[in-house]
Length: 246
Image (cartoon, rainbow, N blue to C red; front, side):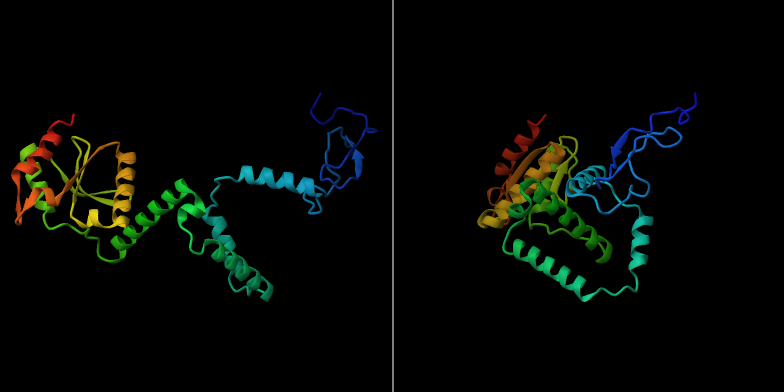
């Protein structure tokens, strides 16, 4: 027997699935099971409970869904030349004021939570660097006065290749040894004098370690440089640490 051709009892009545409360027969003339009264499938007058249910289903099905370029373009073209009413403008301005008042004087961590705030900051750093690269003839990270001399010395006495200004997560590392999976930062005194800078350095270090799963070595310039010259004895202590890394 073909699907849809079997006979069913048309005396059975059910409520329309749109939530309007009207009754209809459970089966149509061809014996097919039905849930809606004709024309009620897309009705806007759903009862509150039905509306909430539909919202939940839609939000779950559309979670993480990205609109196609064609859909975005179609919407954009539809809005070209359209003037907003005073009510729409006022409504938008009021919602912006509410958002502004809520965010005013707060840090990202307070608004979005620790994890989301970190991700936002990473995205902002990366987008800023990409913008500078594309629109300002490249980017030149700031280098310390003794940075190159210290890294040259380490390279020579460890016989390991160190990549200068290694880019990761929107940060530039002073040096990165791929062979040892070792990150190196050459810190001048400003890295130890200011609380904000210390906090930034901690964030940078934790972000890099989480991404590369590497060892991290901070070399304080004050400890390895005396009278504008490298103190080999002090720097050799750091080199011994590097040699002990497996």
